Image (cartoon, rainbow, N blue to C red; front, side, top):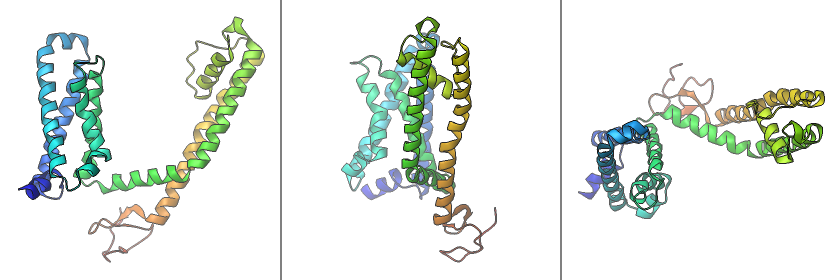
Length: 266
């Protein structure tokens, strides 16, 4: 019996296991939509009782599922402290905490993270491989990105300090932190407009910061792109994925390196 439940709850290769996960995803999606709708003041007043009943119903269902996963898991502690285990726990805690601590109700939307199971359930290997490539490229470019961000922070601090000296408090730059805030808004090309330079030197510095902002956006993008390209050369290209065994082969491969089947060009 326990083996059968494990196959249904944790398995995605069987029909029953896939059906269980699909039903669970539908319930998660409905519960997240209810949380979003409940945030509308007019609807919260009109359908308060329905929202309350639905929320506790979903919480009970998800709690039973969480406890069931712990019971039938071969290594309960490994599941509890895994990424999925933590997400499953966080999805039910807000409902139990909300009667004692106000303001935690909206955190029930964390259940949306459980929808990430769809990639595992539907075996969308292309999305999985692309996410692995992105994670690898971020890890490989970590030190380069950190050095670049350090340079950006130093540039913003210097620009904010210079602007504080140029403009002064009478033009809205009342302090160095306020001037640094202006520099961040300008470099990111957001431009709220709540603080703006008045003097000619200030406008010239502002123009330089805006131009640098576009260049700053391009640098980390290029670093990550290079990392993803290198990863695909090493591990294989998802576009050259074998339809027989799902193995990703190097770019330009005609036959699968693992099973020998001919690769269909996509």
